[in-house]
Image 1: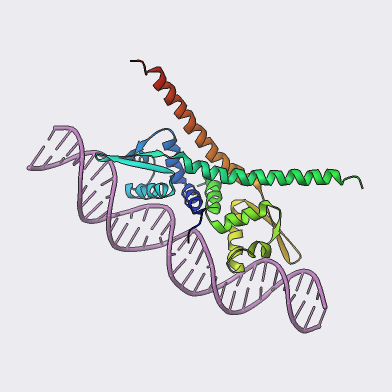
Image 2: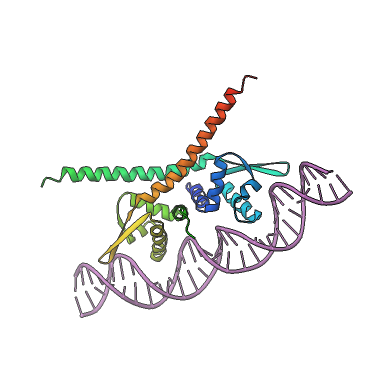
Amino acid sequence: MFRAEAHLDLAFQALADPSRRAIVDRLIQGPASVSELAAPLAMSLPGVMQHLAVLEASGLVVSEKIGRTRTCRIEPKVLTQAEQWIAERRALWERRLDRLGQFLDETKDD
Amino acid sequence: MFRAEAHLDLAFQALADPSRRAIVDRLIQGPASVSELAAPLAMSLPGVMQHLAVLEASGLVVSEKIGRTRTCRIEPKVLTQAEQWIAERRALWERRLDRLGQFLDETKDD
DNA sequence: TAGAAACTAAAGTATTCGCTTAAGTATTGT
DNA sequence: ACAATACTTAAGCGAATACTTTAGTTTCTA
């Protein structure tokens, strides 16, 4: 059974962890190696690798290995999809509030 | 130890589950009781309650019990904060691409 | 006032998550 | 060739998740 929104599960799940958001933050500045990403995190290298695996599975990050170093970079498409899911809901919510306010205005003289 | 971004952990974590996103989707249309939220979900009522607890803990949803029914509604503030976290990163990424393109333009005549 | 309705609390379970340490495998510099 | 560098794999472990069933409590309604 396939769900169309399954990629949003992975994206939001990936963003739910502060270490992974820190990695995204770093990669926003530009590509980085695994060790560069690991340096500021109080964690073993395999721990960082596992976070990277989650980020890659979600499509937020892509990487390529050249020689002995793997270079990671942001793939903004999924970031945009997650943003849009929220933006659409917020827009719907605001539109509903508008209709509600309009209704109250129209019926306030009774 | 308190982290300023801890509420983002909870917000993204809450949004990472399809049942919880379905609840948010429903509440965007307007307030609903627990049973109304549970009806479309293939899950026991306590299961739905647990999802609601996660949503309330994240601040995405608030609820109030009147008589024997609890009415839930969306609280859009946290939704907006999550959206903004992503929007800021995407903006930074695009700004970086712009600078990169500009640099390449300025140095292309060699 | 008895019973149905709407939720709530508690406990159990299988799976997943976020780490760890230990032991690899390639690549690269001397 | 040898050692250092940069990652990778595997296994293990405690805590958190996502449910379940069972057994309540409170509040309405006939």
